[in-house]
Image (cartoon, rainbow, N blue to C red):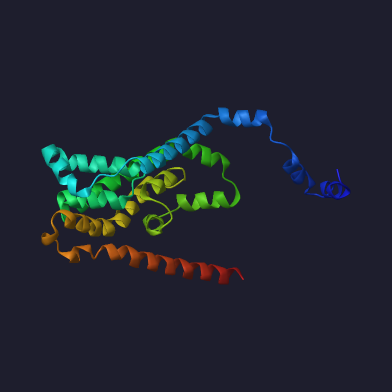
Length: 251
């Protein structure tokens, strides 16, 4: 051991540096892997990885062929649209595709309603799976800034959920899983998820309907899709002002 390292170890924070020099303890790692929370979190990661691989390998159907499938289901088509759309969302299929398909099958208004129903159900399922498989693991290990971030999620209102949903940080399903691993409350999360999804649901359903009935679409119905961009700009501006105010007060 060099003299410089010896001098560093004699400092008050030398013990911490010494722990960093130690090799990983296989027994400690084994105990960690045997913990139920670790196994459940590993299962969550495997589930997400499996969905990601399937998303890359499974071909997507042609939206123009979907009305024929819905017709074959008869009166069960709306239920199948909501449940099937929710399962696709929790499997990490982009919400844009699900909403376009709903519009192509049922038209702009009904398609938007079924797409929102699917989004609500998918948000609940993803949150429940994330809470069941990942919350204990995260709660046992977050420290420092991560603990403060987890507390921020726990205190979040509906507006906070809308903020996260509108920011382009991850897909709809992945955010639902992530929220489940935090201390977030379920009711604000579900309410904020539906509100954030509403503008683009109407717009993309109208665009999807144009695939099968281009002459019957009022393109003004697609205008709500722009609300998401406007809301995102407003949210970023408000966050920037709040952050600037906080820094001024800290001086």
